[in-house]
Image 1 (cartoon, rainbow, N blue to C red):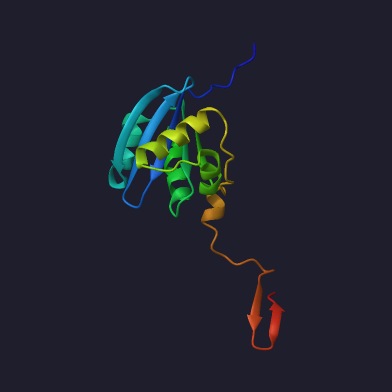
Image 2: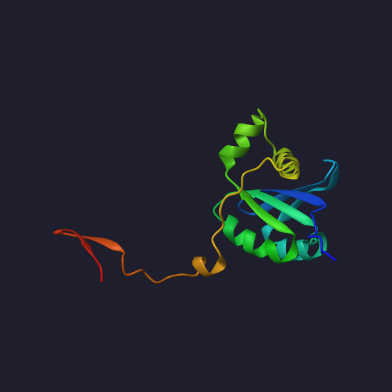
Length: 147
């Protein structure tokens, strides 16, 4: 008896800004099934608990807080995919972009598997603060190797 891996049933596009995000979800047939919903980042935790499920595949563009959002979202959903903004722009070529339009485009492209993901470092790498021995540093006399 083989166990089938669950597959996502909703694809959630997030258009993330400094103080809020806009979320829109589509099903596998690209029908809108969630949102648009504007969520202040201060209310993100309660929104995730109320709204997201382990059948949701979430996608968002890289921003300054994307890795933190990735880690916050991951326990609540099937997957979190980060994408490079120029990749999305190349695909869409949309002339006028609103928050709702951006989130919907992300959700639809993700549902169709058209967005190449950005590599996300594991949490252990994000907390790494020590400097490796091989780190090269610059000195007045030239470049030397630390040991």
